[in-house]
Image 1 (cartoon, rainbow, N blue to C red):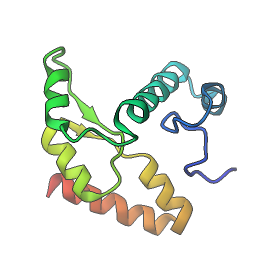
Image 2: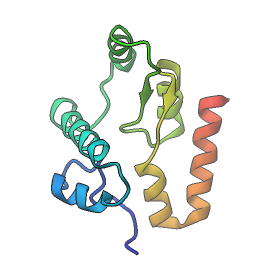
Image 3: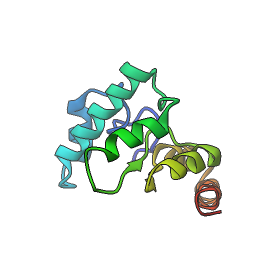
Image 4: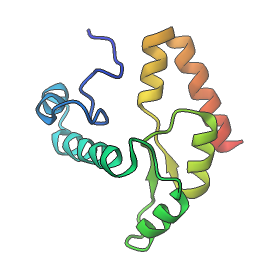
Amino acid sequence: MRKPGPSAPSPINAAAPVADVVREWAGLGYNRRAVNLHRTALAVVERHGGSLPADLDAQVRRIRDTTRLPVGVGFGISTPAQAAAAARAADGVVVGSALLDALAKDGIGSMERLARDLAAAVHG
């Protein structure tokens, strides 16, 4: 099994070709979701330099104006401070790459610590 990390063709890796993303997700039944997440990652890179926009509250309000569904924020969340800011603006916070990076770099203990720190920042 390949170690997860920034070079893996995940849907949030905008540098990965979409065909690699779909191949990596084959068999999970989420091909369309992977393609849409990849498109979102590309948009974040192209429009915002790879980071969430500074006006996250305004962005979430724009989304809320178009739907009654819960709004989650998940691109670029890697620190407890970012998770707390996203939680203030949105209904949910999604963290993926930061946890996988912690796992790949320093093992399960590091990932667990980061997950606890993120959760404490969101619920604290």
